[in-house]
Image (cartoon, rainbow, N blue to C red; front, side, top):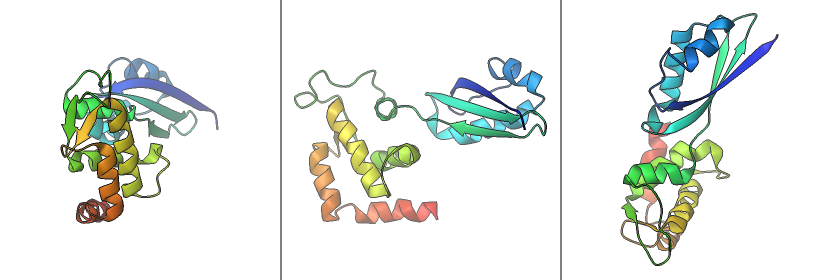
Length: 166
């Protein structure tokens, strides 16, 4: 089973059969439109961001698998806030404020790339990145929000998002 890999950078949700995909996949004999649809489905949450995508094609059966990487957490946070960069002095300067819903959304987007075992710990990892960027959450220092998570203040919100997954 010879396999070929094609790696491309695609804007989330906006893959099309033109370059770079079409010319790279055409010689491999796969249905390019099916590949494009799969990529767009898997990258729809990364709209406006460049996402690394790997397409693995079995050249005999013409079956393919799409693996989507994810942008760095900081890039997703910047995109959510509509900013170009984080703070120069994160503990003394604030460049934006995320809602807890946005933090959870980012945690869900990055979950597979994080070391977390559940959504709460994933959110706490995202909060750590917020702190290093000068981003507050719900108007508070991210460390304070991490403590609130530990104290159970956000449990209802986490339960809502975890139920959506089921």
